[in-house]
Length: 108
Image (cartoon, rainbow, N blue to C red; front, side, top):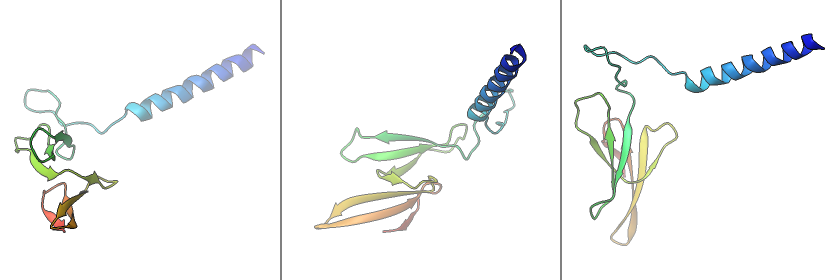
């Protein structure tokens, strides 16, 4: 009986450790010249700015000296490669698709 309890406990502990490793695991980050870690250029931080008359999203690349990119307020695609926005224009709805990596309009 004690052997079964030990086996059950080790199985539970192993499963818990696997879950923790999968949940916390990430790709290694590059270290800068000072030894501190920086985020990769592919990682973006999106901030919604609604302080003005028009809402917009700013895409920041942490660790990059590049200025934030301005995107229209809208819905992201599942892979965050495109953003879809809809605005009223002369009694019609204008739908714009932007590339989140470059900020360029793909189509509208």
